[in-house]
Image 1 (cartoon, one colour):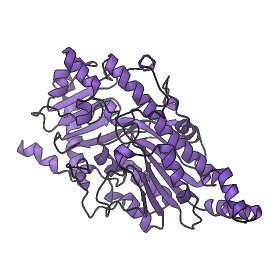
Image 2: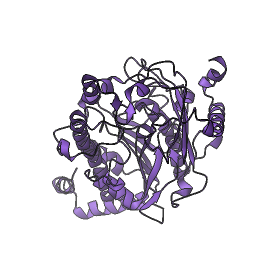
Image 3: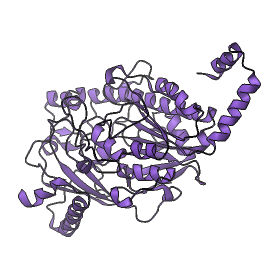
Amino acid sequence: MSKISRRNFLRESGVALATGAALSQSVHSQANTKKNILLYVVDDQGMGDASCYGHPVLRTPGLDTLAEEGVRFTHAFCTTPSCSASRSVILTGLHNHASGQYGHSHGYSHFISFDHIKSLPSRLGAAGYRTMSVGKYHVAPREVYPFDQFLSFEFRDARLPEELADLSRPFIEAVDDKPFFLYFCTNEPHRPFYRETSRAFAPGDVEVPSFLPDASETREELAKYYGSVEQADRGLLRLIEILKESGQWDNTLVVYLSDNGIAFPGAKTCLYEPGVRLPCVVRNPTQGKRGLVSDSMISWADITPTILDYAGVEYDPSSLHGRSFLSVLGEERPKGWDEVYASHTFHEITMYYPMRAIRERQFKLIWNIAYGLEFPHAMDLWDSSSWQGVLTRGSTHWGKRPIESYLHRPEFELYDLQEDPDEIHNLAGDPNHSEILARMTKKIREFQGLTSDPWIIKWEHE
């Protein structure tokens, strides 16, 4: 309800405006004592695809506002580049190989988390929070990921993000002693990218990332993707307006992130940088310094413990795989935040390709557990005009990467990201890097042991 319509409603109801002002003052006073949480998750947005990240074409005023008021991370990573599995990590603080959410929850894939898992909404609900899931849910079962309210729509009939924001207003403005947790998920910028309500871009306007082929089909799809990114941002901008109008802005933690990388081959479903290195902006209302840029290496396993820390909810740190970064939000280069781990097993049920990885400042090691198999495609990526265009022309490369090496991968991939940011030159077989390979391999095995990874048996049995 807009400011004007709300005022008319008061007049037509015979309620004095002074009474409305008193109520507003009461709500604002009550709001200032709360520690509300907004977790804003977009679908398949790539790293750098926002104006606050320096993109020369995209305009994202919502995320820009958040970055000006908070912290923009330059080294934030999902742990698994697939929608359902990634969201389970975001909402549990556990790698998906431990939660059981190995892949997609919907349709024939039917992956679900173990029923003993304690999720973020269940922990916050038990601590006295009002909880609401808006938009794309995409985890299962509901008993593990419970919310007091659901505002979800079928994927193909999804509401626009700003519409969902307006529908969330009553939840945000409710006169209630309890703080709120709003889990807000857009379908944008997932394929099919573009809606008519988005700003239109011409193929010549786009910046083609180095991992993609600079072809007409790619440019056409990226132009539609740009419109979808801006559409997703409009929902965030609207929520920020609602938080400010309701007096909740100054006591609401806002976390913005993407579940996985852009929906093109070489990114989504891959552990290469375009699939896992993602935008993340966090605004803590109690933080003194604003507009910071942090190079802390964080992962989506850290989201749940950070939010619990902010909310003051007690938990056993050893029960989670991530750790809270709340205490280092005010630091641009904090010590001890220099490595992350990744774990991917499925996307769709037909796409078995387990991978584990460690990513340090300079080096990344990927262990392709099923390296004997051809790397599988998600259906929407296979059907994309970009991929089909390359196949039709008989091209040998996908961007800088040979298609053969994309489809048939070795057991280990070791990359020097400083010298080779596109991850083209595999150093795993280089004798000069044998000690680095051994050290990082050992770390992956230790990670698997610490996180109860069933695939650790592959070291012995295959």
